[in-house]
Length: 428
Image (cartoon, rainbow, N blue to C red; front, top):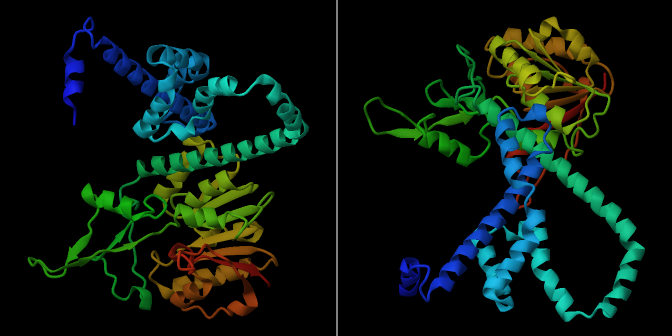
């Protein structure tokens, strides 16, 4: 709420006795704007780390913004500080530093701005002769510190680049598929086992975990009327129950975990196969987070195969290491044989109702995954998938499960997202 004094200032002509207050507000606004421009410049510098071919929707905007923002902070910062002190006097500088912090909440992200406010005081209170021994001492370790700092900054910059790329992929995919992330005419089958015994076509809705991983994402879809939250148990009544949400994709958090040292580790020179690659989330994430030599996706649905092909060739230029095959894995068993890592993420569970066909598919996979040391990432477990298929494969003679240490929640228990991730090594 404005005070009476503030109302007088806002309505006083510039030539009146309150002119200095007007100037103060004017320069305060300019300083706020400068702080914002510095933040924008640093943010845009971070975005510039993204290769041109990985930011199709941002190029024109970013290039225009860079031309107006990134060149100014270093060039004019001292000049603005001197103007600030000229108008308000040296005794006001700390007060306005505090105002900036409260006004934006991001002042801690501007190390250059903070340093330049403090620099005059360092010369004012510390005699020059006292600084010399400190500089000599710092010089003995500065080389090591500079190298360490450079390594840390490079690693942080690389992590930011990867995060930006993944977010761009998710954003682009959201705009490429409907809210339920299903292909036109796609038929979803509810598995007939204990886990899904209460699920039906009327009370089940697909929300892709890669695109909408959080409750807030789902709430946003509900508020926009894009997906239902509840279903009616009796037509015409007010009796409702919550909708069952399912996902045919692993979440981004799950995929980051899978491609971390905790699960797959270094994939340099390795071939990864994703059976039923769907949106391509495993492939894109693998391309960004790993050094796998080749990432192969086999997808039966033409809509999804074309979507992936478009992503890796036209949108994100990932065809250097990603290859998409539109077809049935039964007709491309050579891909199973040559792969070092095979990902099986809810691959048949919701798409094939015929148990005899399911059993045949698993027998084919078992027959072609026999090279010792091949890795299988399965969501859910192979034991669960084989039981759903009614397969009689002796899992103990085929693979050995690799113990994992997934992230824990605040109670020290395995977080829900990671419980269904299983890693196996082929033994014969």
